[in-house]
Length: 395
Image (cartoon, rainbow, N blue to C red):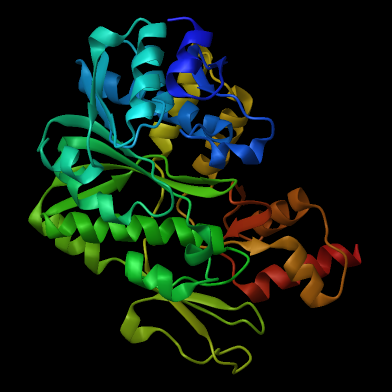
């Protein structure tokens, strides 16, 4: 169908673009912020997220050694699901939405890329579609407006053993502590309003997935979760196991943060300090959070390797992010802002690379973090970090 004819059919102007190696028909908008007013939704800023998703589907197909089936139950115009099927051989799946106009564009986009024979397109509520698909999919990708929390349980049940659950959370105001009780209601965790709030946001989403999976005697293993721009993205593998699920829930932690001196500590709820041992101020407490690794280092290396053979929209940015994510594993679940530390000391901030090298020379682990260009991941405490910054500033 010609673009002009399709525009008349749906009642608004369309245009054709290319993302990765996939051609897409999307609403024509004058300004980027107008995407939220369009009759159907397509967000070009999520291209990085879809690039990473393509790599994850490629990893999964090679891991299982057979054709994989994906499900995107809130597909919009089909951009994400169609890219997965079109850009990874041996992939098929189900795309669904409640918006009939969106499904018209999903159909046309699938037809445009020659993959209609590899996907099913249905109209239906996400939870209904997933609940009717028990154990059918190798990957379920939940990308709603706002919180994914209401869809996590049905998405987990729709997965095969060892399948991948990918969820996007864009409700960053609750997750970053601006509306803490909204986060408590949605995710069962209290956030912290700190310089590392985006990392806590991701870890709250991971903790919610782990708790929800445990209800079904399942446990999770993060694959390549991350934060970018205005969202956090949790990508995990889901396995069955009552004992593992129990131990995983027991391993969730709480974090105490001193708003006065930036001291912080991670521990079990019964051991969490309500008073800062450093300055005796009252601590802010967040959690429960996922305190372990949020990505698999070996999987990150494989994904970086796959970028060489893929036509990604933001290839170099994806590579850089995956490299940063790989380097910041096996670290505490927070980071220090170099500028915040320097400001507290009333001194100028030294170069990031010098701080990292100095911390390592003193026997600590240290690296940059993808959560913030000013952030330093390290197992050193605030006293050691301040001493290093003070020392380098004098030089």
